[in-house]
Length: 61
Image (cartoon, rainbow, N blue to C red; front, side, top):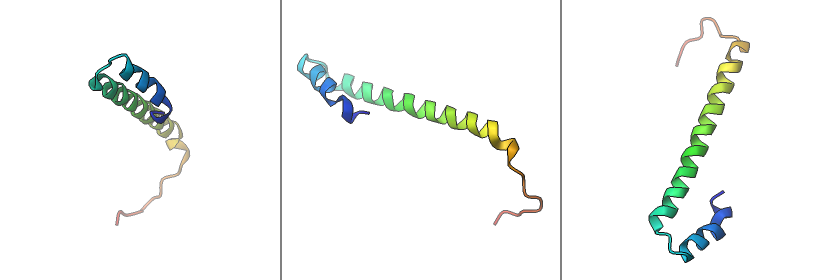
């Protein structure tokens, strides 16, 4: 997604936005995507975990 926004970042740079602002936008996007992926994964795990049988007597290696 960041590569798709290069023109927007270039425009921000041309109007004088500091590098810190552009980096903050990229980090913010990464955090939002990571947190939403984590949340979706957690919901999926909690939703389907009861449908998978547990193995009785299985030992950890």
